[in-house]
Image 1 (cartoon, helix red, strand yellow):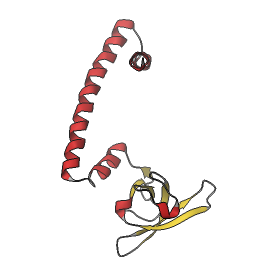
Image 2 (cartoon, rainbow, N blue to C red; image 1 turned 90 degrees about the vertical axis):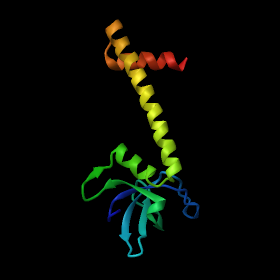
Image 3 (tube, rainbow, N blue to C red; image 1 turned 180 degrees about the vertical axis):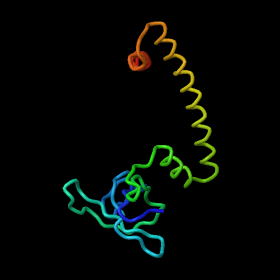
Image 4 (cartoon, helix red, strand yellow; image 1 turned 60 degrees about the horizontal axis):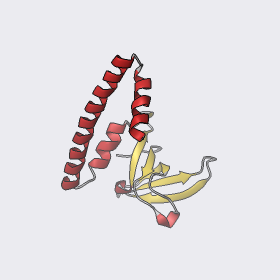
Length: 133
């Protein structure tokens, strides 16, 4: 559950306040009905919008009490957890296919590094350049 001063990322476009998907804000109030007051501001600190949102409309990306950004795995789990069972299954299948591709490309990178005596980053750049053509 979000807490005061957590940084959140908008999960929807909030056209009433001209805020787009992915914009970040801070939790400034937690209400008994399960809604939260989120302040969106410019880098200078000037408030752009103050919105009352439900947890379905945003995703916590920074835990203020713990003073840490959530990992990609935590963010993915939170996002996937909001999907229907059918969509979750599709994401799982996609992740499996990506894992297979990662294994294949990892093997190719190891082969390139051993054959050409390159470091991993150089092999990755070489493989990326070949694939982009």
